[in-house]
Structures are given as C-alpha cells and as structure tokens.
Image (cartoon, rainbow over all chains, first blue to last red; front, side, top):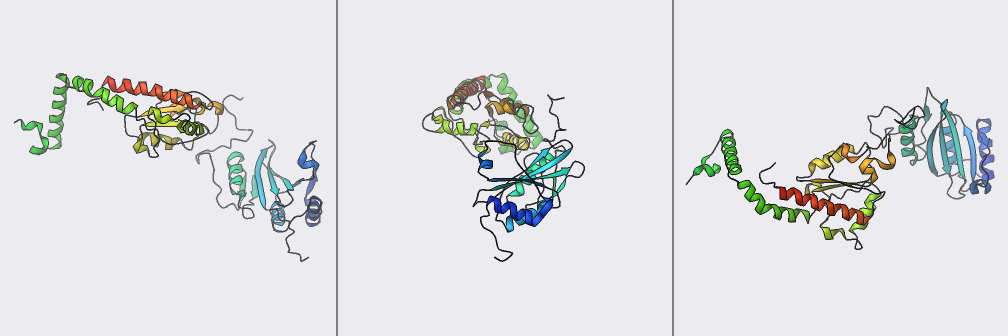
Length: 166
Length: 187
C-alpha cells in the first residue's frame, strides 16, 4: 500500500495503532468512566486529548488518511481555570467516533481552525466563538452567528452571570 | 356655487389649503357630521375588517406549527376570516408566534411599522408573551410588548389551534369596538 493511500474503513484498533504510530506521545488516550454505554462497549468511540500544536496535523491525518469525513461537532467547555475545545470526528463506514479534547489557556484563547479540512465545522466554530470567546485562527469568517454583533460578552462562560445569579 | 369646496379648481397654495381644509373639518365636527358618518359607516367598517383579518405569515418557532394546524381543514381558521399574507403591506394583524431573539428584534419593529393602519398585534405562546422558558436569557427579548404594543395575548406552550382561534375571536370583538367607536376623520 502506498503511503498516501486513503484507508477507507479503519477499525477501532487500526485507528488507535495508526494514530499512536504517527503522533506518538503527543496524544494521550483516555478511557471513559461511563459504564453501559453502547458506543463504548461496542468499541465505537476513541477518547484522546492533545495540545494546540498537534490538532491541525491530527485532523488532517484523520481526514486525509483515515477517511474520517465528518466533523460531528466542535464545542467548548469552560473549566474556569482554562478553556477546552472538544471535537467529535466520525467515520461513515465504521461509525467510529474520535473525541479530541484540546486545552486552551484563558489569557490566550487561540486555536487552529479545522474549517479548511471540514467545511461543516464552519458554523460549529463560529458558535463556539460567540459562546466561549475561543478564537479559531484561519477561519474564513469568524463572526457571531446567532447573537447580535454588538455583544461584548461570551454568554456560556462561567464568569457571565444572569440577573438571578450571584 | 361655493368654489371653496373645490380646491383643485382654484389652485390654492399649501398654506391656503391647510386653512381651508381645517376650517372645513372643524365645521363638519361642530355640525355633527362626524357622528353621522360614524354611525352610518362604522358598522360597515367593523363588519368588513373583523371578517377579513389578514395576519402576517411569519412563523418564528414551534407555535408556527400550531398556526399551520389551525389553517388546516380540521380547525379551518379561515372561517373567522384569517387569511395569511406574506407581505406586511397586505396585512393588518401582526401575529408573532415564538421566541424573539435579540437579532430579529429590529426586523419585527420594522415589520410592524410597514403594516398599514389600523393594525393589531397578537402575541401567541409563552415566548412571545413574556420570554416563557427563556426567562432571563442572554439572547431572547422578554416579551413582544417590549418592542411593539400588543392587543391580544394567547397563552399556552405551545397553544392549541382552538385557543388560537379563540384569541382571534377576541380580536374580532376588539376590532368591532374600535370601528363602532368612530374612526371618521381620525388619524
């Protein structure tokens, strides 16, 4: 098999071993604490976390080599001491989903955009930007999606309080 | 023949026309003409307007599904004269069904101002009445009455089609009272 051939339907084990061979210790594989989850019991979900430098080459590899064609979701989490971006990337043939967590510091919320790889990530990233204030570098149109352009706050951050809260 | 009744025949200036027309209006008011015309035409206006309420076809959220169900044969909202029009210029009821996000707020105000008067506004469902489930939200206007004056509130989440028809029958009474009170020469 030539090196640039697409593996159309890599299995759960193949995906893990190929990712380990390609990226080595830059990826941290995790096991879920959830029990009785069908996707986990049937080995259809891979949990891993990585850093900001690796996310773009990792996504390029997943899309270009392992045929993970769909960015199911890109969302954010506010852990108060840092922010986090969570990607769910799916292969249509095997239904294996890779869940990637990337930590982003509060004072420098920049991360590479994956919109050049998956066009479907466009609005996911815009929504994450408007709700969490995470800036996706290389995004073609990083504007607020559903909230007015005049907003200067990010409503899903823990520091944003509604009237009823302290 | 009194030529003062025919301004186009005597080429008035704008000032002269204003003097002449306000004098004529005052004369008609003092002579009881307004009352007579109102008594004669008010019931006709009321009958015509209350039986042809044309709401704006502007579905915002899940209550729009109930609006569609109300137009379907089972409930048949056209019995009470509701015909949906897609242009605000052709409507006289602004029917808002669903949550109003902050981004659409100026557009709703603009739609309201595009409707020719006399016009009525119906807030349908909890979201349009008070924000409903989106109480204290960062992105939802807390009630339609914060941006336009509202005539009828129809509560429910979502409302049933029969509740909607009931609300429009209430609006019919309001339209009826409005025209029977007299609208001749009133702006």
